Image 1: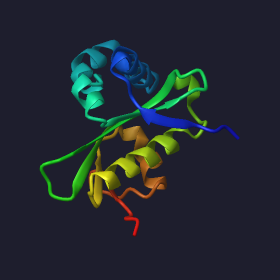
Image 2 (image 1 turned 90 degrees about the horizontal axis):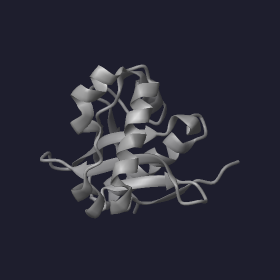
Image 3 (image 1 turned 60 degrees about the vertical axis):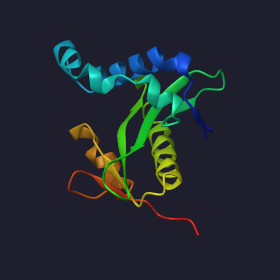
Length: 145
């Protein structure tokens, strides 16, 4: 069984993390024209990295193989999972589950009770298996006493 290490993203990784998001999106069947249209949403923003909103799963070498971003929202008690991406060569290894766990941990740290998820439609089953509910894939963050 693989052990996956989670850590905060580093500012110097911004470009590599954005490229990871693009590779993952292309691997789900979207084309270059789609990527061009949605590139702002795939870009891992430096201010989010420096704010501690971006976590990665890394290999023992330190290379990031997955990324997740969670921020607060204007809705009281609700945080937002902007995106969860795993580099395609590392799919089906439990990295997505580890990243989702990191997202829930971040939501707890933000003191929110819900995690709103914006996801690619084919990812709905993944999030539902982890406890998300419709509409708009929403996860109730369990609180630790």
